[in-house]
Amino acid sequence: MPRFSTRRVSGESVSPRHFELSGFFSPTRFEADILDCVVTGTIPKDLNGAFYRLHGDWLYAPKFRDEASLSADGYISMLRFRKGSVDYRGRYVRTDRYTRQIAARQQLYGYYRNPHTDDPQVRDIANPGRRTSANTTPVIIAGNLYATKEEGLPYQIEPNTLDTLGPTDFSGAWKSQTFTAHPKFDPATGETFAFGYEASGLASRDVYLCSFDRSGKVTWEVRFDVPYPSMLHDMALSKDYVMIPGGGTITSAERLESGRPHWAWDSKRPSYYAVIPRGGGAADIRWFEGPQRSIVHTANAWNDDNVLTVDAPVASGNTWPWFEDVHGAPFAMNDFTIRRLTFDLHGNNSQPREDVLFEQDVTSFTRIDDRIATQPNRYIFVQYADPDRPFESHLPDDPRLRPVNCFGRFDVIDRTVQSYFVGSTHILQEPTFVPSSPDAAEGDGYLLGTAHNLKDMRSELVIVNALTMQECARVILPFRNAFQVHGAWASLADLPLV
Ligand SMILES: [Fe+2]
Image 1 (cartoon, rainbow, N blue to C red):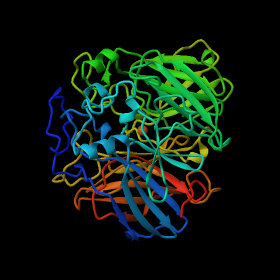
Image 2: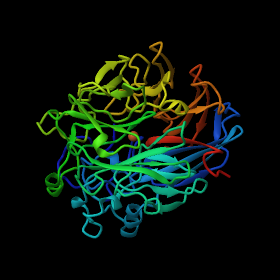
Image 3: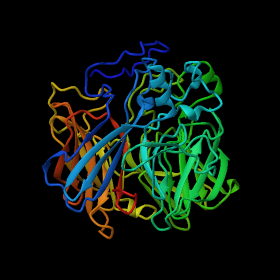
Image 4: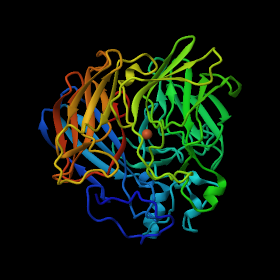
């Protein structure tokens, strides 16, 4: 499939205006408004609010052929639901990176998270967060909307116009150069927990972890060092603990100074897990470790007095096609399965117990009914590839994976899976769960997710009843939208929507 190559051609430069000019995933490079989108089926009348999606859409072609798509420029879109109709809006996030590239009319930035490879006019080694592309997750904290990416500070976004209001350190309260794309909200207390890693600069070992209260005020902070710097993409939150998994990915100042991509994979490095008591200090952290693992996202966590339980999609090796193996092994995709990690909080065992809950291969994009976060949940939602479903073989598919063609509702109590198949010409992205009402039972609501229609070269938002796993409606966009990383639903109570 014509897409930026995932083959390593180390250091080979491309023309700043060289794009792969065909294929579904080529850059779109435009902004749009559509009033009253075309819809098939019937939009549920109880969907009132906004579905935000954050994408990566290259403004200019990456400088190197083996660049990770992780650096594509941030683009936020909104599907605004009003009593059965939907409006679309899409805008680039006006990051410092965006502004400088537009002014120069060319790509100025090198490898993902390596400012040593940037053009001298923007190179800023001491402030690497300045080059963030803000392309990963739309995040809502205390009534404000942010475009986040773990390499820098969040950019605040006006939730109706999608205008970029600028980067924020929360009025000076946030004391890290970086901010995770996966903060966690505790529905029981109204608190949000977030962290930044490589907090004091490139390849540093320090992590900064905070809680915000319901009003957005920082109420607790702790700083600690990890065993070795590694990609810390997500966290887990239970009633009493924060858990941050890491390991496998490695970096160093020497590696960055030599002009190489930020991350490599070391299969001989252990995975590690920091279990941090909420409200505690660095000395209270329990450290666990295990064999090499790739844990990109978590699904949920809960604890009693003795045990912390975390459900997550876990792979037993490298899942990043762009990150070279330091031992020279060729990349081979390790599949994720939904596993349960159990941490004995008072015993002497320094390894978590790991149980595979489902043998089905899935992607790493698990979501839950967020109202159940920090408590034992029943359902995990995720998109996955079912190779037994039909696919029109003349169409291109993603070169790294089989066509991701199903949403699954994984019942961790009954250990059953109910699926929704999107069709033989489509590829699905992350499902976001939206409850049908604030007090509906767990899983009573809808899954919203983007489908790439490879046949008609357009993007469609699929709305699926999460109880029956039957499709309710599709919102048809008359163009391709760049690939979404994550999405978020905002009700009228979450943001000041007009
Ligand atoms: Fe993520």
